[in-house]
Image (cartoon, rainbow, N blue to C red; front, side, top):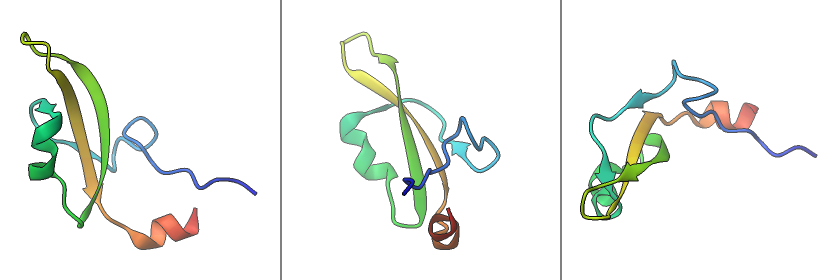
Length: 68
């Protein structure tokens, strides 16, 4: 039995859009919603040592998830 493979910006760049900017962990709650799938990547460190993340999103598609 194989695990379903979810698309990522690396495997399906046409499916995702990158949100502009870099985000701190506590800012994620302002970005996330139930209408999209998200892919979050580590993107470095701010001058104050805070970890930063790049965020990609695509429209949520239940059919695609069930077909893979």
